[in-house]
Each structure stands twice: as C-alpha cells, then as structure tokens.
Length: 115
Ligand code: TYC
Image 1: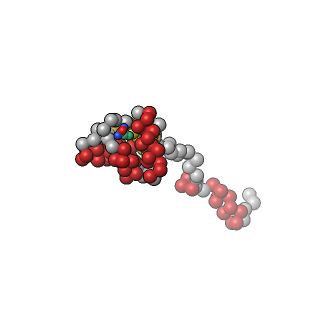
Image 2: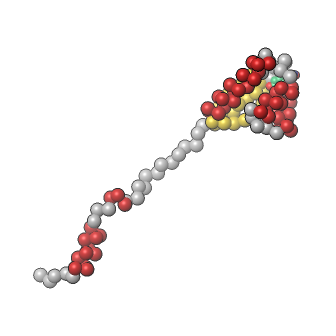
C-alpha cells in the first residue's frame, strides 16, 4: 500500500481531533427583562402639597415642574404615577415615603401595581 506523506497524514488526523472544548455553545441564554412595578401615589385631605412635591423630588427624583404636575394630578384625580421600577426599588421607595410621612404624621400613602 502506498504510504501517504507525513504532511498529508498530519492534516488528516488534525481534522479528526475531537475539539469539544472549542465547539461553540449555540444554546441561547436569553435574559428576561425584570417585571416592572408602578408606584402610585394616593390622595388624602391632610398632607400638605409642598410636602408631596418634596417627596416626589427627594424619593422619586422628579424635577420641581414634574413633581408639581404629579402632585396636582393626584390631588385632582385621586392617584398618580410616581415612577416605574423593579420590585425591590419600588418597595424601597414606598417604605421611604412611609417613613417620611410618619415623621410628620401625615397620612400620605403610595402603593404598587404591576406595570
Ligand atoms: N390633597 C392634598 C391637599 O389638598 C394634597 C395632596 C396631594 C395629598 C397629593 C396627597 O398624594 C397627595 N393638601
């Protein structure tokens, strides 16, 4: 039988090498975006307007114009959107509002709704 050249033999064998570790993993690892939650501010008859505006600025990082707009929306319609966040952030902001309102003994409340 005719001998193949070493070079040809090498090339042939290289093609047979099991390169499992180099095989691309074609599995899709798609990350789901997290569920989002609306933090909804509720109206009451006692909390002063300027306190609500300050909460919207300090907790929800709204500018004075936006904070005032949201406050009046809540005042007129009974509720309004303060922001949309992942669950933990929404829960933290609700706690912060509770704490600030409690210090001043205002009944200001906000709730969470799935976005
Ligand atoms: N209704 C309140 C008032 O007349 C003001 C207010 C606005 C209270 C928004 C709560 O989330 C609120 N003083």
